[in-house]
Length: 149
Image (cartoon, rainbow, N blue to C red; front, side, top):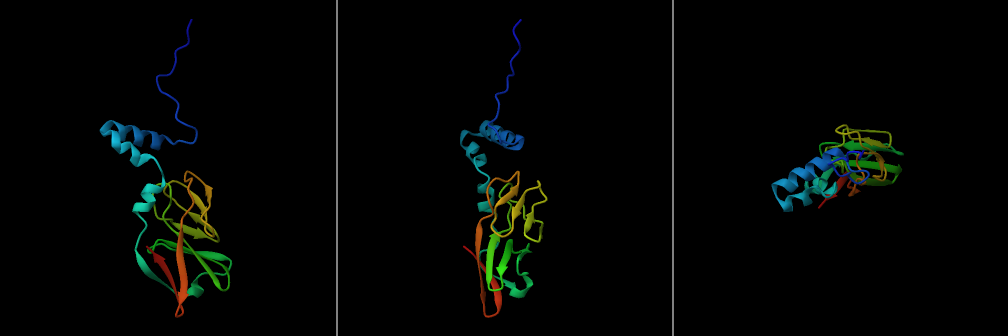
């Protein structure tokens, strides 16, 4: 006797159910809409937060060897040593939620559980697969600033 086969084709490894459903719905609506589901970074690019120079305040608020979340400004700033500041976007690359918290050097997105290294943006735990992109930060006239274009 022949074994029944599944009518559903298998999704590529690493593809989430949400991605499959999103793309299927978009494909049914219009052929061109399916491209909206093709990458995680599209939502991130559309939701990066304030543009221009953003005043983050006192640079001493960022601990040496740690990182600080500026949630409203959507920026994470790390401070590897006394005189160096590095910035990252605080928008999760999975579904564009704002990072909820930073503990020491780990950034947590509570929407779906993604975790990132707050010093370099690397993904530590999915579902996100793309790292947090860099944001230019500087200390000028005693104030920490971020520049987003």
